[in-house]
Length: 351
Image 1 (spheres, rainbow, N blue to C red):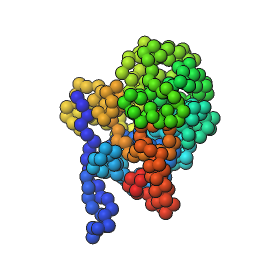
Image 2 (cartoon, rainbow, N blue to C red):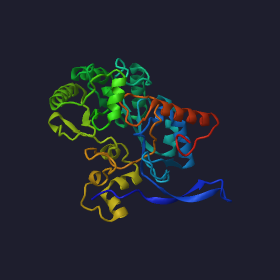
Image 3 (cartoon, rainbow, N blue to C red):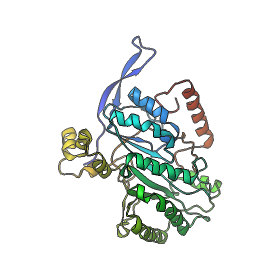
Image 4 (tube, rainbow, N blue to C red):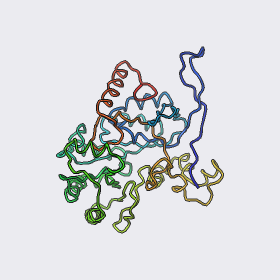
């Protein structure tokens, strides 16, 4: 059984050309919203997100030239935030709590300070402090540590990566339950390799099988002290021998564990709920039926609707696949901040 689609509902949107000032469009109404794989909304666009949440919808632009998609928050129960620096967003958490929305954070906490691969993220110690602060605020089960991606180059070895992970893990392991890592995927994204080389990471490359074995063996040894759930994001190899599962960032299991009191969400995540919606899900495991068909085959994430936009993340990480150029990102961000200063938050990030 495969996931079909989100429920579609009518939505009133502003239309200055109409006598009524509005028009009715068809919108999808996702239960789970991803904010966002494409850009760091908590770091740069938190005010936009909260304004659009109040407005009740966003418009998502397909990066490959497709038609705009209206996304309603009418049935949203969970928001999954992806961020390298959620500190600017922390003041909004009380509002989310008052609205009764569930949420958790996928916190990408890397250490590429020496290599300069993440030029606009705060210093590592500051990000670690934010991680701990966020965990103490919402609970360690709702802050997932991601080390993403693991980059090898002439300057960065497997041993060097493990030292970076050990340094971070020694401080944050008591404040999370999960570590998700990903091995850099260069061959599919030519611009990633070019950008890494331009940033000074000469010889950037993917892991060999022998290096994967070395990394996983030593990571499993480190984790004997930490006791985290380990998983690899989008990885075809079976790493179960090392106690490493297949990554599930948008996680059925995490939601069931953390948000069990949300009746509507639990219904959606159950097979009974899917049977009621689609009539053909009986006998399947919910996490399998709900697998996101828009992600890679090796990705175990369940369905969500991403609301981010490419070429808007001002972290400007050298390995990023979602930015076409730093100049375009800067133009988009300047347009956003100019509108923000006028109190305007358009239905898309870039207006």
